[in-house]
Length: 166
Image 1 (cartoon, one colour):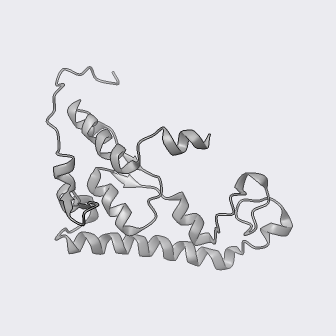
Image 2: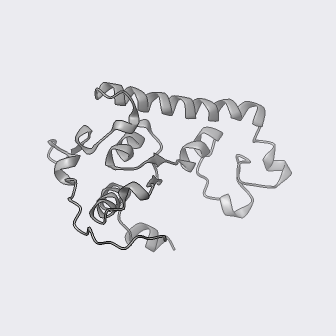
Image 3: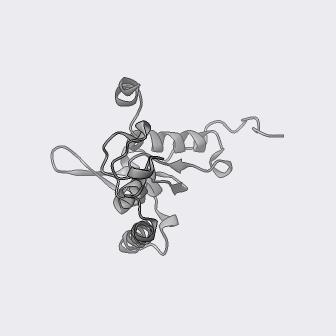
């Protein structure tokens, strides 16, 4: 339900660092891969997620936009006006694969290129090297705070954790 989606969960901005911190505290970070998803459409948001601790990022929304999604909110009705989420042959004609694949490829290529540019601007060789100290969070008063100050890396506090498998 929309009420749950809108009001009952943490935003990824708060949830991702907390999840990563919990894995560190329990000594599980090296055994669990963290996948970030949820409105991470731009290179800046992808770079943020990597710095916050994600191992990689998925972006269904970004690829939908690159296909031409106009957010008509009719995905589940088989009446998508752009033809992306429909099996109706009349509407499906709007999805011309021979044209759209280039847009999708360009989105993916440019997103990766821009994330790499952000990494290089931070003095890094690769985006995998992002850490919390590479990010600043804008505050309401116009100042900013480093992500590693807002969410400092925790110490491992639970060394006696029983292994998950075997």
